[in-house]
Image (cartoon, rainbow over all chains, first blue to last red; front, top):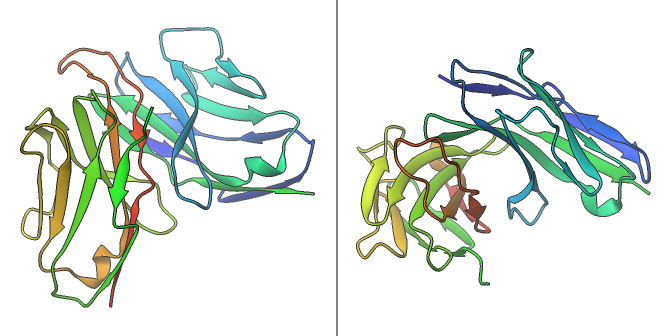
Length: 112
Length: 119
């Protein structure tokens, strides 16, 4: 069974700083996808970034980028120039064997 | 493009009562998912539909939970009778058309969720 672990329950940084959220996963699958989802207090889950396991190049979306280390089964999210609107729960998720599995989440607070 | 719609947004019931949630996916999305998100945890898949057929309900507590998607569009999730541990947010998501058996992943789009409190 696939498992996703987020070891940082909470993080807090100042606005404009860079922050990195950690995620590790365990799987025997070779073809899979990894995601970071953002869930603001309103609860709407929003896709932040997506990475295909077969791609060596790390995905980027504006201020968001990932560090995908397939051998280490690590998938961290870097948020550059953090903004107040980035305050939310962030979930790492793994898709493989036709199922999406989420980590426990990291509560990120951006302070003014 | 309209997103995934869910209702109600909040529901408070007594234990042993029944409750139903409704979800309308994004137009044209063949696959629909129901997740349970307990406070402080990530969402957990309860059931997945492909059109009006069930693809995966392995984590659905079938003694009390049921779900249907009769016309392959909107869906209802029912709990009867509810227990205290069912207190959670119930999220509905949809995706375009991930092919069963193929390693193709379509992005899942989530609704705002229904927060259930069982007293």
